Image 1 (cartoon, one colour):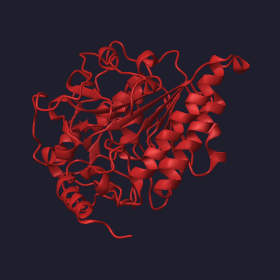
Image 2 (cartoon, rainbow, N blue to C red):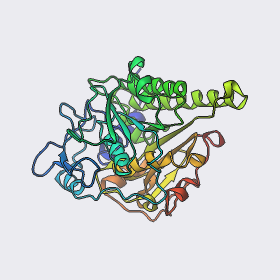
Image 3 (tube, rainbow, N blue to C red):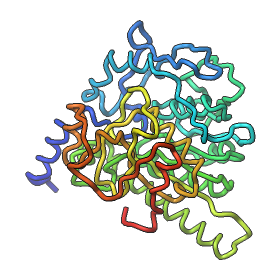
Length: 374
């Protein structure tokens, strides 16, 4: 069946506007542009515990579905990341001394590696998982906090062992040439991980998804969905996770086997940048998938980690995130991001904006998924 003129217009608009949006939150390594190790683009993680300040580069052999769009990943962006300070640790951050390890699924992706770094920064033990079992972002790290483990989300027999005994699991995996299609990873793979977390009693599953995932007529969705129907698969994965946890927690509420309710949090970042982190006070959360903007991957990683610290707000919730001064309606956010526009927040108000000077206050305005239409 052919596409109508309106649909082609939407796609054309998307191609023109998505360049700097980078809405898909995790590494789609089949198309990811690489920051090659060089004098100008070596990515250094200063201050990482156990890293010794060594420089790292993205794993080889990967591109991104945005390769021909993401010229925004330039030398300037790389230098900005090189010079960024280590993520500040809030006083209210997770206590590391008594924590079971976190497990990061997809640790070699850009967002996944930032999640690992955020945990190491906080002194929290972390299992960095990948299909190969090697964490490429910190070769020879020597950190006692970091354990490398093998996990392929398309193979259920590899998942249970890595999530077992974790205090939380962060799902930051996405489709790749080597790792699987969007259907296999972003949908079925996510469901596989969620089922393993429920089976093993993991207290909290945090999922990195994508803004605009519920808006199939938006330019962002239309463009990104050209790559293996990835947006369709992401929302199917999200919906399946919500249904699984609703069923599990409903049974627990009825006294099934004396189990405790388990939590999930779905995070939908806006256009991902390689800028230094701005912290909780600069961010805005939203619900309803009507608004987006730009956000540093480092801030996304911090949200993933800190969400586990406030389950009273984040449990069984889905939210969008972006820098508060970049928020815009989905119809225009692509152009806004390309222009690196700043907003005062008054031109479009969804009514579900959440702001706060601390992580506690930032999360405190969230609503549970069963209380509003996603």
